[in-house]
Image 1 (tube, one colour):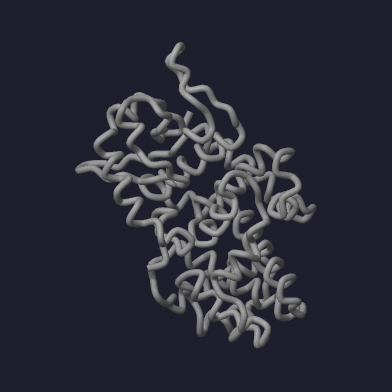
Image 2 (tube, one colour):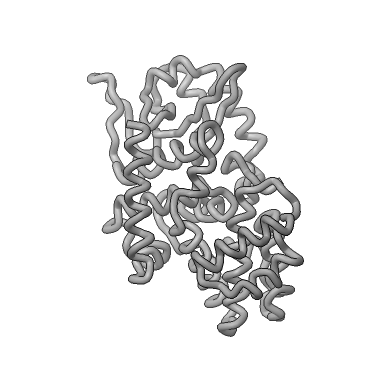
Length: 304
């Protein structure tokens, strides 16, 4: 399986699942009190009101809690504000990071509960930035030749597409569809894409990507590439609370990746010195970025 419904199913958070299962149990018990805290963008915030909220451990990523006939998405707002007991309201202290967390929650709800196709089809920009970000970061770290970076870029595009499928291998029709898409959106040569797709049409995760990278490029330098190294390579490409973990999750979890891009678009001055923001605002992305901004506006309007 390559579709990861929750950030906690990614390799970066794989050690957190037992604790998350316990947190989900507590959230189920405390739903009524937590629901009274606040709702925005269709998600439920844990803000610190009520006895049950104090029993909920802190959590970084949105959590989907299943019930008999529906699911709720919870986010932890407590790191970004505090409860004012005199006015009985939640006072936000870090508005930018608070909103970023809410958008990741809403995207996670859409991914799991509503319209996962929206995440995939919103714009060509997310795959463009993903491919550029990953291939350039790896190439700088390992001093790859231009042709090696080009092949890593194709592999990164296949990896991004793999995050949207549970298939283990793409059939010929899907290979042709993906090749056409990558030729149109990323300007790759069709024969180069098909050459890699022939053997690696679905990349199962970060570990799989790292393993295949050396084979595809032929670079012995990439023998050293493994998930831990890759996480260190992208570690400083974004910033904010838990940024290192968030970018590591984003490689395998499209809602988290989209959440990063939305945060940059809505708060460019805050994030402008990050590697991801600098890539997004390269001139040749102007048109697709404008289209992405319109899609974001529609996304926010959908929930307001």
